[in-house]
Length: 120
Image (cartoon, rainbow, N blue to C red; front, side):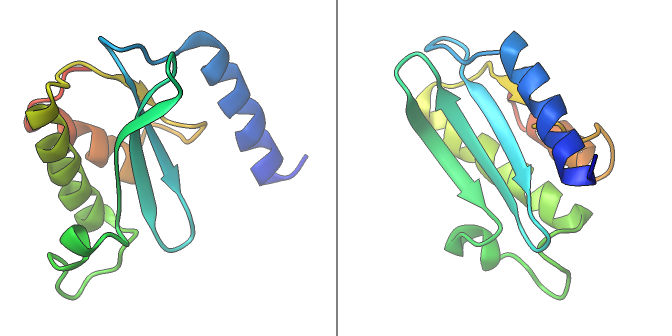
């Protein structure tokens, strides 16, 4: 089994167990080879409440010399997504790591979002 197939299998297992509701939406992270994407989703209504990526203009303007996929980008993304969610009344979320290991960029993103006020 290839690496991508194994991650997809883990992702399906995780998604069976968690779901976002109106009171506690799901915060999903995705990593590509160059960027990181984050969405806060209400699965009951099937709506994305807010989303952000390292390609977004607000995030991209904060970069200096580092890559859009490293830990510096994860810190900025965690701060920005918390800044978008809190004014909309989203305080508690369910964290969906999409089959990625909880270390590196994923862990730093989650820790930063927690520090900025999101509860999960």
